[in-house]
Length: 224
Image (tube, rainbow, N blue to C red):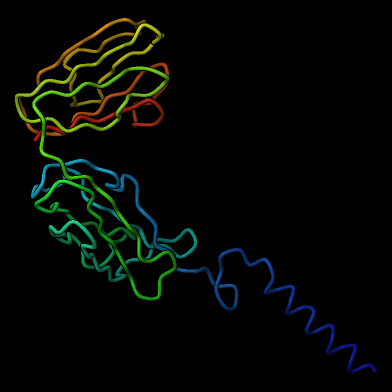
């Protein structure tokens, strides 16, 4: 009887140690996980057969600790095009990145980043290929820029349109970006137009509903 009781206690103790380990592997060791590394490059818009402006980025970590030297394989899944790995393995921050060249046709493109034996692998990225138009309109309303990400050709124009119902929205460039001058908080109806003569990415936000880091009411204009 005594032995059985002791045996039961030992088993119960082991069960307690294993239960609720919360994302750890055997023996309580943290699990190795792959996730997108912000800014990740997810959801970009670009011209067919052109490289996206932001690299794709993933992070591999074990608990809170970055995992360096982890092999990462990048693969095109749909849309054609190619992906060029900046890093075949993760760096000291656990991050690996790649440049994505979209396929030759308009539409959705997808790429995966994979690493053997890592939870969360593969990580999927999506992008949209469209021919850059010469003019686009962004509606400033409902605490959002609609659409929040647009593509325009070099020399093209972007019109920001406040409908009559829009209240207290601004367009503030993030450092190094266009519009050239901030538009302070305004009510609709209102319309402002900008011409973009230099290729690049131009990020902006609303000071009332967004953040300078691109959170909340924020947007991007990609010029190609």
